[in-house]
Image (cartoon, rainbow, N blue to C red):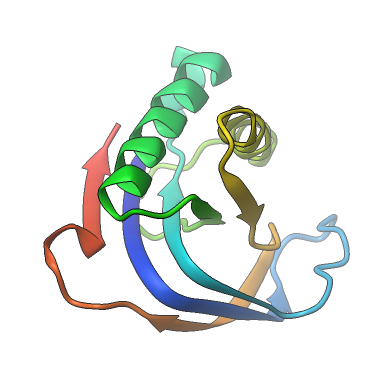
Length: 137
């Protein structure tokens, strides 16, 4: 799994184009302030490690990054552009849902961007050391 995190003053998205046939309705555009945007690429090898192992590793990394950036808001965004390897849609969705629950149980405010859509993005990210973090988990 590869994760690219941006601390953002403001992050907003508008659903643009559906790219998964069975994707549910994306809902309305959303805006978030003072949050981490976690761009996550779940890879095929992650499936062999199991969803529980992967979501725990992801949640722990995001909690660390949130503490470093003094925020309790996290947005999970499926970003299939960090690797050529891709996990199945079902595994990725389960991992995102489970990580969201784990983070919410730790008192974080968590949202997910619409799965199965290309989005128009607005990102206002300040330039300081831990405002951008890349990791291979």
